[in-house]
Length: 556
Image (cartoon, rainbow, N blue to C red):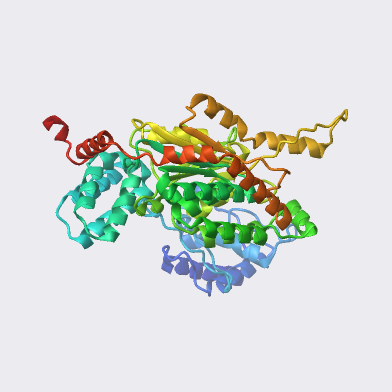
């Protein structure tokens, strides 16, 4: 043992440490600031002496008091060089009781305490999800309440709620139809005198897949090809048809389908009902605005952004002129034809057409082609007219969309398929296909090989060919029903041509073609203007009564 004075001092300090530990609260987990000084004194008392402190023998443990507990390990100061802090920690670990082994000693004044993590219940962190039963229950409520007596304001509010609900949950269409949604909305259209209620009712019917009867004896269908600036050719053909028929284009057809530049004309003529002269002026102004660019800037943009022309400027132009209305909302206007804009979906196993519709297909009717009715008008046109190399691709959600003309530059076959889904029992009255001009040189090259530029141009011309579909339609449909107008051009006109002389030459070729085919135009107009017979009206009345009054068929 050490000398008497050293032993007394050591035991006194050890007793102070025992009293301090016994007063400390285990729940605080942090000792007070005077503990380091106390530990330092013990450390100096123990390690400055050259004696060793050994554990008493096991048989004397029961007689020992807590003050006489000795250090279990022999400490050799000369053999082991350790810091004062490490010495103090070893001494504290030897004397602190077991239940303080997890206590955190805060020797640093600046050290911040870590916040204690709390166990948060899963029900607080779980995201709110809407289940299918709740969606169906909401759908039934919104449809059934339309059958009750409501004020004009209440009816408008419930129709708006139903439209919003169906846009967010398209899969609820079947439940709404089964709950009598179409029947209730048709009755509202009969009784209301409010223009706002009529608009909401038409949109709700379009979302539910209701299709009104055709306006003439049968289905009258218009399709417009793609072709860039050559859309002026299609405009000239439409002007001639409108002049001969004496009716605007949107009243002459039940269904209008366009691709690329034809999609632009479809929106301008079928939705906005813009006069054709104004369409021509707008077309020329937009072409001059978007296709005016230096070669250096275009090549740089093509290398950096995969588009020769400014795609952002093109997008802004479409927003201003096409509108930011949802495409399904175009059904609010009365006598608006069904429209379809064709794009190409590229991020799939194989590229395939993708349709933008202002209608939903009837309940339990599916189309061979994928599509949607929710994007804005400008988005649909931007996707359909995203010609590779000219403009960058367009993205909607997880879909990458390109120009529809890459796959279907003549959308007549797609339009026929869609119309048969909408009016399965109606006959075809007139199918009118309008092209954007074609140039077919007779001379061929006599060279043994062709360059890469010629190869690429040949592949693109083959991919965007429109006459193959025309040949098929011509063979399948009667001559009094199918009409194709695609003027011959004396020279090849590029998609981005803005030279006034070449455009004037293109318009002269179109006028010459229309004069030569004036008899054919008159036959097409005659087929378009054929009205309904009394039998057709009787069939429409019977179908309508069955929709509004389900028990009507049992009474007849």
